[in-house]
Image (tube, rainbow, N blue to C red; front, top):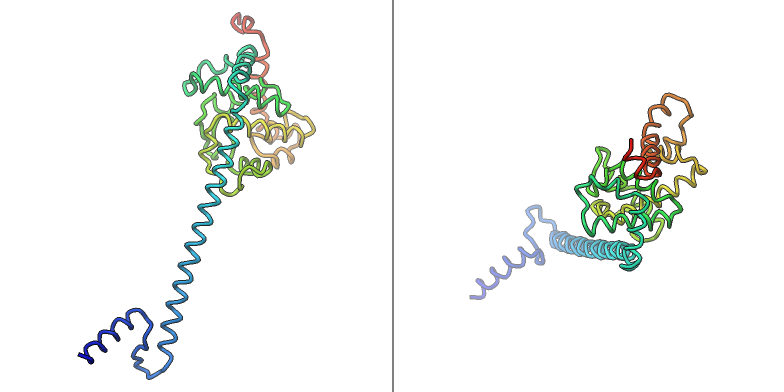
Length: 256
């Protein structure tokens, strides 16, 4: 019986790597190597688990911050939101939205209010914001481009991460791109980005719009009248055309 118990204990101990293993070469350190490997493996597993927990906690914190931002954007109150939406209606924004099949009812009202509220907050004419949305996405909040731009104002996820990082609202490397399909957040970020570009290019709207469409680096390197300029100025021309059409009274547009 003693021999049987001894054999069983040796087998179990060998499986766990805690008893001396038979060494065909006759070395005496097999036990030490086996134990060290088991300890190292356990430490790595614990480190991986702690890392996963930390990443999950950071992701949840960032998501909470982003939810808080979206809620804050819509927290102006029902009365103020209705007033902003009515102002957008009076300005003519609804004329551009009439053919949109993606925004209806409350969503349409919230977007109209956001265009007025966020444009004024960033010192931009709401009609210019509406014109950019019309050219970029035709008021489709789920629009995407081949380059990866998303939402109403066709923001690139890296640009959105940079804008959020500047505001301290979320870690710039953990933004889920799908949040850019939230139309209110998209308008908030898009108008903030346009305001920064206007400041960067000293109020030159054409250059700021080229930068919005093709990137600040491209716009900075352009020379007016060059082949690249002529190729890229179609975008600001389209935006300015839409902007001017909004500035005309509805009866003049209907008479054309």
